[in-house]
Length: 117
Image (cartoon, rainbow, N blue to C red):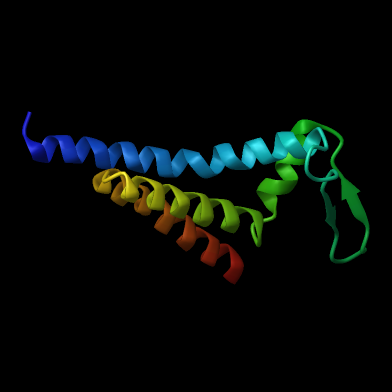
């Protein structure tokens, strides 16, 4: 197998890691929040009635974090992937690190679109 094929496989592996890592990190934080390890249970505030709604199940906690696109998804999609890029670049896995940047850019575009709506 030639070098180009190996580098393409590493880049595809990086794209998969970059797409899955923020979702896994968000799920781990949700599980930790549900069991009150680092946070109390999160809540949402309705902008019209100013009432707060708390989550009562693990799915509810994950849903609260997944729907708060202003902070948590931006934090996990950009920060986690940039830490992975830094980690793999220091280990001389530059093709893998370049692959991680692709889903990061897609996440950033989606988040900018969500903020503009």
